[in-house]
Length: 58
Image (cartoon, rainbow, N blue to C red; front, side, top):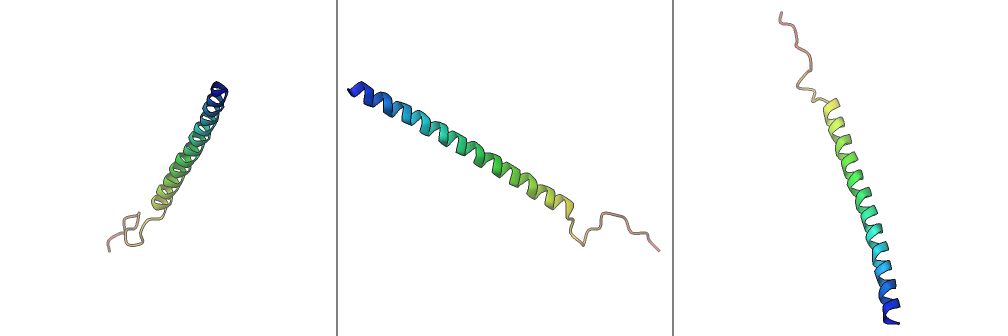
């Protein structure tokens, strides 16, 4: 009977590991997507004191 209980615990641990791996992949992908999104926002909105064009001199 001990073997059956150990096998059940082993299967349960494998399922828990798969769930944790799935959650970790989702978390890492969300962090990467947010990082790329923030970089795109910073890149598109330049500060107003540094114009992207050269002003003509009079």
